[in-house]
Amino acid sequence: MINRQNFLFFSVFGLFSLIGISCSSVRIPTVPDYRLERQVADEIGPILRVTEDRDNAGLYRIQLSDFPRKDILGMSVGSRHIYVSYALAERAFKDGRENRYRWLLRQILAHEVAHEISGHAKSGQAAAFNSRPQGRGVSGADIGLPSNVRFEHYSMEKELEADLRGMDYWSRLHWDCRIWVDILEGFRKANYAGDIFHPTDERLKQALGVCPQAHAKAEAPAARPSTGPMSPGDRAAGISK
Image 1 (cartoon, rainbow, N blue to C red):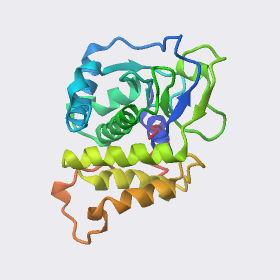
Image 2: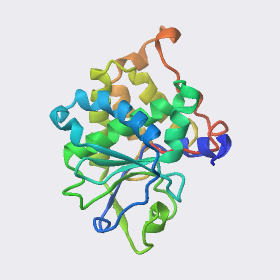
Image 3: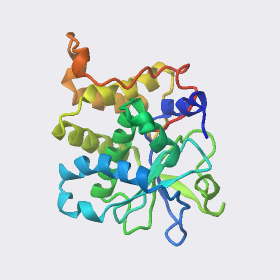
């Protein structure tokens, strides 16, 4: 079980995606928890209903994985198949109350659905990961696969495209885009610049460009769901994009 401090730490590292180039013939270990799977499916349902893939919503498969590397929170592997971190799902639905993790989960799901619909992961031959790309790259062992499985990043253009599409889905759902902006601003405040594929400043600039509410001076706290503080101290724990 991840304690609160350790889990919050990875939230500073954003929603990052990687492409797996040799994992189509192996199976990522999953956690059989129907209740949590159903809850995550209930969260992705509204997102899918506002996309151009709405007629295929029933073909999406959501599974939970207790990734050995705890900063990997989600991934899409093509063919409408998405994995979500079991630890994140637990946090998102803890005590049945809406919390910052629920909004982070929604952001991840919107971003991953965008990758799927954009065709960034083709024919089940690729895997798109939400993880921290700094330091060593993602290995098969990080997700419970043979250590010789190797991965490479999506391009920055594809990451920005997935962000933009994901924010469009949020807009169609009338979800407050300031929450998405707040998450990215939290990365910047924590001095996390991202990398060449996931530049925080570029992602934030794009998000601000399509979120006029973020520039509004007047606040309406009651109408704005809070993701909670995203400072380095508060998140010395763990979530990624």
